[in-house]
Length: 235
Image 1 (cartoon, rainbow, N blue to C red):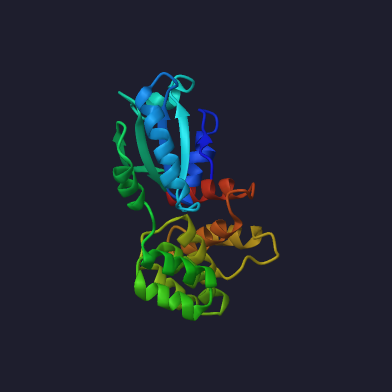
Image 2: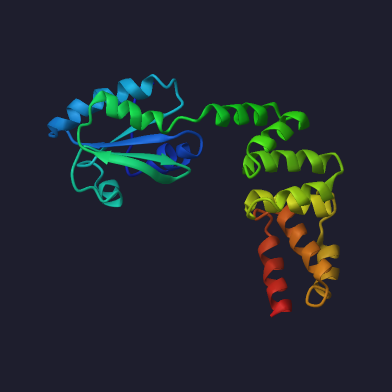
């Protein structure tokens, strides 16, 4: 797989978003840099051998001063590894192939991580239970199993499972579905309006109100207004 040339305009998509799927190695270079010309082919060879498990992108620091500044580049070649939108490793200078190989190997998923990924992809309860036993705090596993449990009418079990990990946008949605059920076909206005009178003194009413807004989602034009009304009632 050929290296991707990244610019200030494409960095978010080609690096930040892509790094949420696979590790991305960022090679900061310039045409006048001799060591860059030595390191570049080594990076391409080693990363190409991963068959897509690691992606290489190249950034011309002269053409993209914004990115050079963002990475606080003091000398080149400068290489950074990114996962989930954050830098996790890096080095400067023209490393030999053995060192580059060790650097890239450290980014590859372990055998256990690959096994968990395959179990999550299988998606049945038995597979997800095995994955959970291997990685008890894996958000992907817990969210997938939680969704399955909710769909099977075992919302209480799903809520107990979600307590294993910190709250996130994904877990909030599963938890809301577990407590409220799937969003009904009505427009929610009557339910939300009735709940507003109780949210200040009734914890269950407040939770139901918040859960319905969660299931409606931020794209529903009424969500922001109802959140504002909730704040006014509470404070």
